[in-house]
Every structure is written in C-alpha cells, then in structure tokens.
Image (cartoon, rainbow, N blue to C red):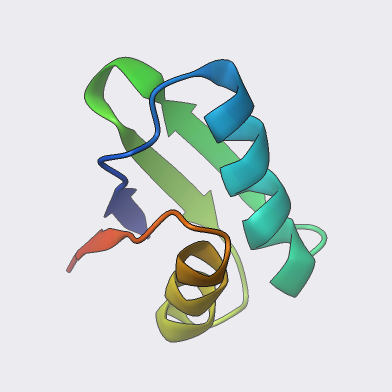
Length: 65
C-alpha cells in the first residue's frame, strides 16, 4: 500500500512514521520517498490500521487506492 504524508519532511519524520507503522506490525517493511513525501508499506495489517497508527503519531496519511 502507498500513502502520501504531506508533513513528512525530514529523516526524523521518516523514523517516526516507520515507528508508528511498526507499532501495529513489527515486521512491516516501510520504504520512504522523502523527496515526494510518500511511503510504501508491505504489511499484513489493514490499510485502516496503518492509517490510524499514522494519524495517532501526528502524520495523517492520504492513501493511494
């Protein structure tokens, strides 16, 4: 799944986003694209669970469907 995260602007943001996703799926693979403010997530968790974790961490995500 792919998400736009408009307020992801630095390496610290990438770490926070990754930590938020891995809080719901510790083995999720997160591939960030900081210059375009996008992430690709490979996870067994639902899109909704990932979105909720990101929102809770302060990084609301716009999903690509």
